Length: 341
Ligand code: ATP
Ligand code: MG
Image (cartoon, rainbow, N blue to C red):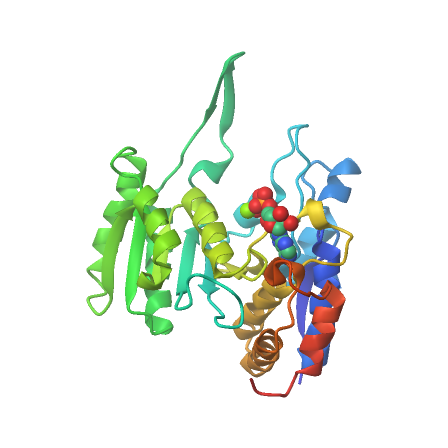
């Protein structure tokens, strides 16, 4: 069968370690993909290309329209724009889908029944990149919420719920304070909810909503929210399943899609060979489903689950108990391909 071309960036920090491990697993699982490697991120910025992404990388993306991306670092200071934000905006990746599932009793968590999906708006809000310095002592960041953008993401959340047999969609905003911006997002949510009478809906103010995720995540199903809240909520949700290193994400647009781990480049553990490749692997599993290879996706997912069931953990999950490194974990997954958990 023909291989699907995929643009791949290994990224910064732990990126190359977890990407190499993940690609090795994908190859053994029989993923029908043909990588086109591109260099983006820290190296490119520091070489003087101020967008952090060279022309040939865009050309590859335009050709393949599928991007599998390791975590990247935007250097602090120097006025560099976030590369993640540039990519999401340029490729029109408006929906960021982040499933968070507990793997109890194998992976230790206080929330064994958790299975929720955060759908984060991915182009607007405080991430629109509109920041000004007004005076020496006053700076400003503009929060941008549009009706078309809100309609698109809210409709995506309801359609996602329907397709994936989910029963409830929750909306988080802070519309008691930001009456216009978050108010619009909430209003659009109420309007579109009427078109989906088969799906239960609710709305929480973000602060109590987050507290509820931290306390009783099993009460949630699909949760849709503006960009910044989604960033924070998905780190919390992933961490309470056991580790921020577990969750993958899909960034979906009309013409492009990008798949990655939810976590960042983790410079504190880079180069040590101990990072958990599971988040990136789960991103790859979402990508395989997206490009029409669900057979490979489920073979991979089963092997990965079996690895966890057998108690083989990287340090972030083992939490002081005996653990394996990144490549040893990958080998354990590979050796379980074809065995059902
Ligand atoms: P970003 O702003 O890009 O989301 P962040 O500031 O949230 O980045 P991360 O890079 O995600 O930070 O790291 C947060 C913490 O989680 C760090 O202590 C890091 O070591 C740990 N961590 C992140 N990813 C992994 C992983 N794959 N395996 C193990 N630990 C991880
Ligand atoms: Mg983060």
